[in-house]
Length: 89
Image 1 (cartoon, rainbow, N blue to C red):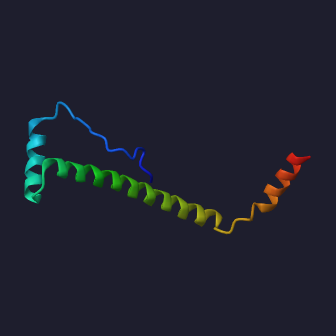
Image 2 (cartoon, rainbow, N blue to C red):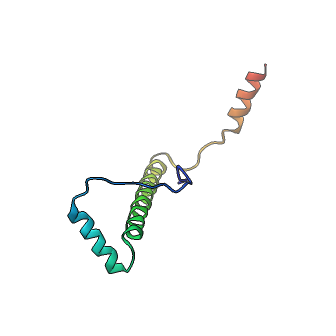
């Protein structure tokens, strides 16, 4: 999925409980990275997981459609040509 904006964006989150900051700071320290790098990776992983989940859901729907209707669909070329010919006349 393409990014909505290719420009890096800053986000400020206000009114977080102190224990949330403390927890993430410790987790970042355990990984030997800054809090900013840790949170950036966390947000990126969450966004990627959401995309993977959607792709998985779409594969499931596609499989259900294929099971119900098959996968051999007639060509639409003749129909498209007929529509074009009608609009030309």
